[in-house]
View 1: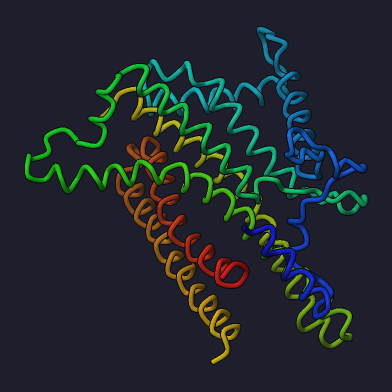
View 2 (view 1 turned 135 degrees about the vertical axis):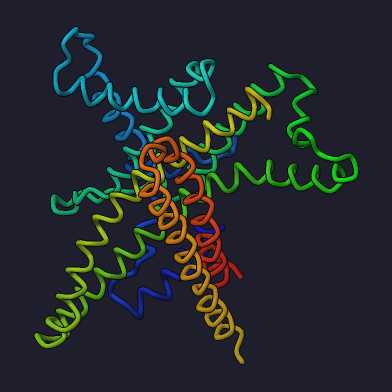
Amino acid sequence: MFVTGFRDVRDVAAEQAKVDPMYQFTIEPLAGSGGWEIAGYNIAFTNSALWMLITTVVLFLFVLGGMKRELVPGRWQMVVESFTGFIDDMLEANIGKEGRKYVPYVFSLFMFILFANLLGLMPLGVFGLHPFTFTSHFTVTGVLAIISFSIVLLVGFWKHGLHFFSLFVPEGTPLPMIPILAPIEFISFMVRPFSLGLRLFVAMMAGHVLLEVLSSFVIDGTNAGATFGLMVGLPSFILMIGICALELLVAGIQAYVFALLTSLYINDAENLH
Amino acid sequence: MEAEAAKLLGAGLAAVGAGLASLGVGNVFAKYLEGALRNPGAADGQQGRLFIGFAAAELLGLLAFVVAMILIFVA
């Protein structure tokens, strides 16, 4: 729904302003793959897919550098091990001993989102290469959230069977309260995949729109003359540097929050509550 | 009032929600820091809960952003 909306507005906005903050989210088929189809579905290799591939390759190389298993770790291995140790500690703190079997999934999830967010912020435009932040699309974050939610459902029903539904009735609930509490717990449970995907998508998209709007102040302000350039362009540019630093922080926090909430939801499935 | 003008006004009003969420996020970190300074020993163990509170407060502000986006681009 957002993609079609953006396209309409972009056509309108292109006539009015020089910098269009929504243009950066356009998905385009690359290298003439626009017509590729399987069973009536378009499977074009888009810029979104390209950046997912780049993220995967960078992540693979990053982790590969730390797989030497040396007794005295080098710098690279230290970095990779501190990341795995971080996820390991998080899962053990939130789920307990049996949480360690989810380290591969949560580690991949965390690193994939983190690298995607950070690569999307890289100033590669200097070299004429424009990074595409695919985590700023709800389709991508929604699928990641659905994977997490599916794991919760599978583990929950596998381990506890139909007893898993006792998740909706917190322990020690007075009997008259059950008809009120159970629907509320059910709704809050079903909203989880939605809120999980929405948070990452909106945080990344809002940040990139903000950066683009500020850059349009700098460009338009400077083009309007020296006075405007000094009064509007320069302060906007300084603010933009600060916002860039904030966006780096947000990129890390959002990846962390996604992994943290996933581990909390898995905890519900493992231990009920 | 024109429908387009009403949409943009509604989107602008929805942006108030982002400001209100900033109060919430600020409150989460302020209270955490307050508690952490009183009892620094317990602070590290509560960082997970800090970020859960932050995520919950932030999500409600982001919903205001979604409402604004829906009003501008979809409605």
